[in-house]
Length: 108
Image (cartoon, rainbow, N blue to C red; front, side, top):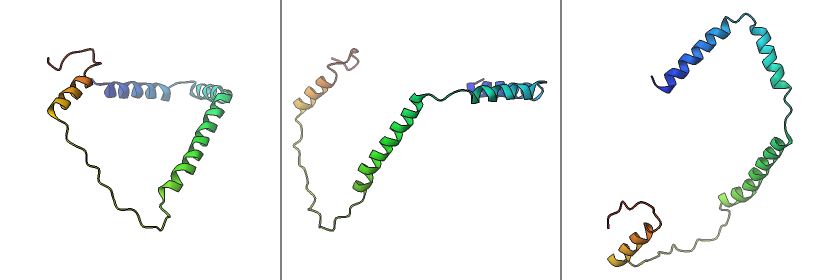
């Protein structure tokens, strides 16, 4: 039995017990009263303010840069040519990439 089947069985059993509970209305009212009495913390207000500020800054930075409104012609594309690495340089780079690893599973 996988986790999803187990969750479905538990949920079905709890639903069945809740349907046949004799004090269902009292339990629901107690739960709703307990949820509504919880005051909101100032920290959650700061989190939402920070999120709104980050969204506003992102809007000011990203939206103007997303649209290209300049009418001038673009410069021709440039091609970067890089020389090939020699086999010795490739081996040196491989050695450097495994230098900080704890396990030696790469051979000699």
